[in-house]
Image (tube, helix red, strand yellow):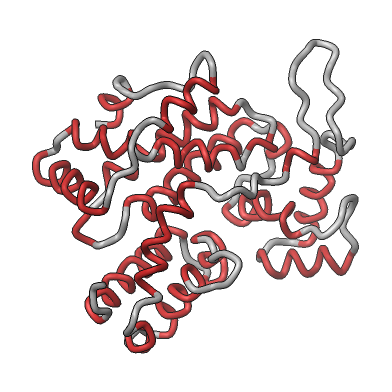
Length: 284
């Protein structure tokens, strides 16, 4: 199915700006429209329904891909890989579970982009284990200053991410050896140069936040306390961390690291908990 759909999808080739404008023109689906299309795909393998689901979420891929621009890889390639993740998510999407596609797709989009970065970024050849990959994608955000880490910081990061202190030191050294200047000054051959200032993620609200708002509104309805109390401790912690945390919820990967399981397992627990809560919270 993925190959057949890819042949009919807009591609981020040529003008990237034109592609972004094109994907913004596709309408965002309502919950009812998404459910209907999802059921058509599930029951009848309707490729046209799958195509509409994908087109309505291409803007989500663009938004997520933008946040990985600091790794020095072409934006079009990041979007292309993210689109593959979106197609995989649509293929596995089950509307009867009561979870919106956006919540399900984010994991698959990021997973494909992560794999692409790890395959192509020349400084990350050591990131071969799951723990090293977690170190690679979290080290920058955990550092509180430029330059090398202090010994106590190395120990703290190693303990939190469950890696060896020497692995933290080595990864930090590799980062520090790449584009030392904070501002890019251009290269002699005219190619775009990426500097550490580009590693900062775009903080503007993205479509995934807007589309997930309906989930948050549901959790703030009457009966929330009773619904949460019905969950086991782990499920309640995951729902609260994902949806009720001020300043932005925890990611699947953060919770996966906390519980020592995969991000997909956290998604499954969250999905089951949300489904149970919906049965207890009155519809608005």
